[in-house]
Amino acid sequence: MNSGTERSPLGQSPLGQSPLGRSPLGRRSFVAGAGAAALLGVTGAGAPTAHAVPVTGIVEGNLPDFHPLLKDELRFPLAWGTSPVRDFRAWRRAARSKVEEHLLVERDRTPYEPVFGESDRTEADGYTRESVTLSLTRYERVRGSLLTPHGTGPFPAVLLLHDHGAKFDIGKEKLVRPWSDDTRLASAQAWADRYFSGRFVGDELARRGYVVLALDALGWGDRGPVTYEQQQALASNFFNLGSSLAGLMAREDARAAGFLAGLDRVDRRRVAAVGFSMGAFRAWQAAALSDDVAAAASVCWMTGLKEVMVPGNNILRGQSSYCMLHPGLARHLDFPDVASIAAPKPSLFFHGAQDTLFPAEGVRVAYEKLRAVWRSRHAGEHLHTKVWPELGHVFTAPQQEEVFTWLDAVL
Image (cartoon, rainbow, N blue to C red; front, side, top):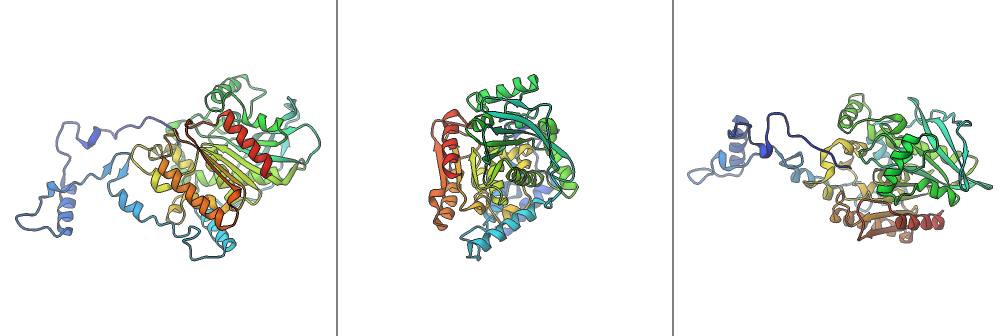
């Protein structure tokens, strides 16, 4: 969910007027308008003409003009409390299965076969940095950053999931300080200065005793860079190939959690997923889909779907939305319903009240749904939701410190 410049379709000016100022009303609009009048049962001298019935087709934000009707049809019938399944464990299995069905990407049990970077291993303040290359799927190898605290393990661990930000030259480096590439270091430091109070969240966690793993999603860093304009084509090509960009990301994150939990240096019962922005979406999604994730902290990504699908919102641009779009899933579950599959795992959600990407009403609706689910499991204390009144779309040092303290308490 990131800003970008949208262009009007070729040959069409704003507000749907033709380039020469001619009325856009053509045969299709006339017929539709007449049909609408007939459906309304209005006839005779008092009947409105076809020109009196507005037929716009597409309205602000690339929405169909009938989008309110589509939104009304979204009832989320598989949500906990709405679903006819009353046993929570059975519901969780059914809900997870429904999500996995809509990922369009099958589970992959390809051996990880990790190769650790002996040549680039370095010591930092209280921890060791090294690269690791592994197979998250059968399609390609992925290189990540792995930080290990000094001392005797096994340690708690964090799968650190990077944001979108329409910035593709770096991925894992947004959260783990690059140690062997000065160009990426400069880019990463500028990103940290903008969103993270100048700090690298992964390095802070490693100093505090956590093993940290960060990997690039497809399109970022070593696996890119894609451009902003290419995202939609990339996603559509996945669909044409019978697959899904967002589904691949979900499967890879779950696989990464399994790899991290299986390391000898890690206490597999104490693995958390942590992320900001798109990474926050990935964190609560990983907690919902993977039993290897024991807790999740999600900063600046939670909302009700219907409340965020409003003119002017960034999600309507497409592009970045495809990283979080599982086609057809909204016919069954809302975003907080998917996140609720993780209940009663310890889960944290932060929102900045000045964050324009997520309307306050959407956050309120989502938080209420989440609280209801965790309370139903007699685990209300395991859910931590907070709105930071003075903050926008950021993960600042005070927020980080609160997340670190929370992780210490729940892992």
